[in-house]
Image 1 (cartoon, helix red, strand yellow):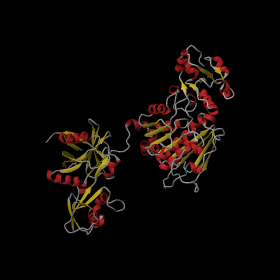
Image 2 (cartoon, each protein chain N blue to C red):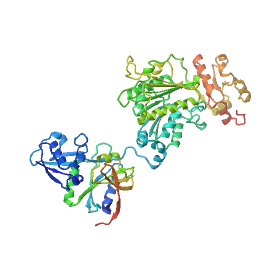
Image 3 (tube, rainbow over the protein chains, first blue to last red):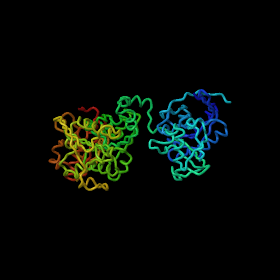
Length: 143
Length: 468
């Protein structure tokens, strides 16, 4: 189960729409309780550093990744995962997503067209290196 | 002894520790030490060969070890090593909508085929050369199967005499470009695919530019110059050429220039026939005829081989040559091999000269029924000739001089040379033949074919006359 604050969701959605037709990407932060319930409260928008066709691929540079880890320490929050958009494609992980996926992280995928977000879903890698969908509890009140 | 910073996603394998002190003189030793202490880390850091996974970056200070000495990079006291997961991904190259999944269900549920083969079909780019007798079933089945990108090259227009075998077309398309009629039919069959049209003749000038944009070529041409051109261009562009041909009651199929899974290149058409037959020895379908169902059978086999080449399923008909005799219902499959003595194909040549024949009959002058009517009304001086049979003339005629097709050359002295001559038949096919014969044998240049024949004239000018 993952909850996303309204503000965090809005930042991710806006990034997805403004980056269209390219894929956007970034990190999100928050807390995880003892039952494994995650609460996303903060978003860090990151540049898509993929050389070539950004409409179908995204990449985050190692430098941006190291900064994202440092930012977690500054915020005193947990780095919970990565979000990215699928322009004109469903919010389902592709094979490209799976091969590069890390354990522990939540992967939020935003399906977007030129004007609006169609769908937002979250996924976690399991022990067999396959994705399971993570249930989203939407519209957590701002804190 | 170095400090290793563990990224968030891997900390659950290090008891939630972010910074670890690890022994080792090089990166390799340090990583090994780390995986000995924390065995669960191993599959996330190392691949099956024990090398650092491509999606894991290791930094010494600010530098990527790929820019240093990779695993051999030496470690000093107090060095800070960061393990940085590569964060990347993207949209799947091939996805299916709900409608597509439902459409292709009978493919997907075949265990040996499945979604992976269907994805290959959707991603594939197939060029079909010729949209006639063979092209019709090839295009219909490739479109139905979900080949995602189909190119069609043909310069011809639909003629009534095509409909006996070219099942892509109907009577409403007569006179229209074949590629456009084909596109409408295929889009009505499968809206989930892209179709690119080339309403032109394939020539030595354009062949490579067109073929190089495709993964597979399906040759459904009806003449030797274009067949050698397709073969040579496929060899030069490195594309497999799924070949078929038909004549009267016999059909042939093979896959040329195909590289198998072991990287071995199969033979091409020139390994089978290094040079074309003497001009006139092998007539075309237009001259020799063909049983209409035969291209349906052979074109379907051709479509099957295209699908096998694209998906990699089954044994492709490479290095083998299949012959079907419709009269005896006998089939034979010969083995064919590359010729060691054949000269390599290095460039495209003039194939009409090479074969001693034209790939395409040259166009003839035409006149519409409306223009003919205008000539009649305006008192234009011209001769009107009907090349039908006497019994047809008795049913209906428009006052033309009757010279049946088989007798035109013998009656050339009856044809005016000093004014325009309009030639007609029932629908325009026989009169075109008569004009070509007279032009070639006698060099006549004053002949006009009545478009649509007497039936067209009745429709547009004199609807009260009898149609048959």
